[in-house]
Length: 314
Image (cartoon, rainbow, N blue to C red):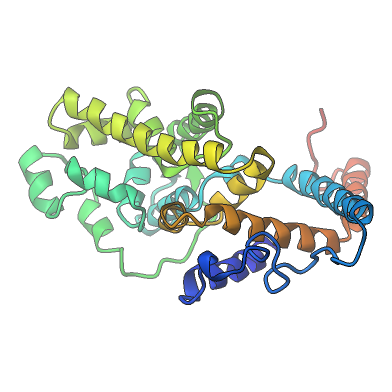
């Protein structure tokens, strides 16, 4: 469902070059039948409109809350952050390593189109000539040059690759940082990189420090990452109504950093969230949530009675 909605959304905002919120009439900017499926019939009375909207919203939110409970914490990584983790597993498989170690997360940053790379380049973490940089610093990284040649190659995903204990700690700490330190439900690339920088005695921390010239550069890099993170979080909290924050973050995990930044810079994030919200609610209402719950219950009972694919119950 979410892939279908995201494709529809990107067609409007990123593929349709003629589309502009400013070209819509005032009454279309918040409710346009062209982009909204279940818009409220204008012939109905105010009381009827309120009743229908409350019913639709309640049904949609109940279904969404249940579906979101079936997710893992990786589902709350931003699009680019999740791609970094995925690339790390694929590169580990290519190099025939048993585990995804933390330093591979840094390598994966180099193969994304995240705008975060511009900051890394400023601190020579992603130098124009990596071979020369590594030679000067006398860093020994097995298979690093082979990794750099993978950017243009197709790599088949391998699910058998496990995460090292160190990598697991980074994932869990990034979730903790997002919720408690930065007060956001989404683990962005900035939060993931800051966590990697601060993970004591880890491979990735040592690798990042080897690229930086001094301790001052380390603090400056972290400051720039936090400043960039604060910019987008502040925009959501000040420019987006609080009742739309739920969908703002759902949209954020579906878009790349560049796409989300484009919506912010062109001042189209609020109408984009409105369109995205309506599509989510419309599709969610069409889902037979009772059938999904029934299947989940029957599957749980079957496992409980037969011990097939056993689950842990708390």
